[in-house]
Amino acid sequence: MLELSNVSVKYGSFAAVKDIDIQVGEGELVVLLGSNGAGKSTTFNAISGLQKPSAGDIIFEGKSITGLSPDKIVQAGIVQCAEDRKLFPQMSVHQNLIMGAYVHRKKRKQVKESISEVYELFPILREKKENAAGSLSGGQQQMLAIGRALMSRPKMMLLDEPSIGLAPLIVEQMFEVIQKINKDGTTVLLAEQNAFAALKIADRGYVFESGSMVVQGSSEELLANDTVRRAYIGA
Image (cartoon, rainbow, N blue to C red; front, side):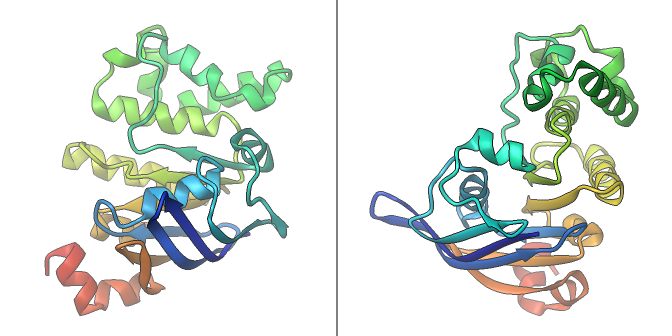
């Protein structure tokens, strides 16, 4: 479904991502592991069209999307849920969700159905639909960010550090929701530092260090890898 072939991304002379190869099959849940600055978010930004690769190609459903604008990539079926959520804090929960449906803005019935689906997935958002997004707790804001991403009915969702800054119980709930979204038919590419939680729900994973992909394998293989366990799981 998605293939990155020898992709590099530079900021000036600094190579943030170097010659990476990633494949994500339709229906999979794949995780990118690595510490801050490892290149995970830069990879997501390249896929989303927010940062143009300096080399390589990005293929989605058999067609190159390298160099396409972000709105064209959303229309193709890929949506990114950013690490810092990027909500509109003064706007209501409901208004933030509507903003996520701009691809379907002329299809009112479809937008209404999408909002109902998000409220069913996150009942607390229905309760707080008139509240300003900035007044929500961290966990609720993450729910809203994911819900807004779902409003475009993506084929693939890029989730960038969804557990960051959340309490352990909320993290567990968040990963259950991500797993449900995947099982309901959305392909998921997840970037995470919480390796143990991510690998418990993922099919496969890639480990990044200093902009390079250094290890890849099934979740079981990565959980059993001593180097991965020492660096990212603490065992």
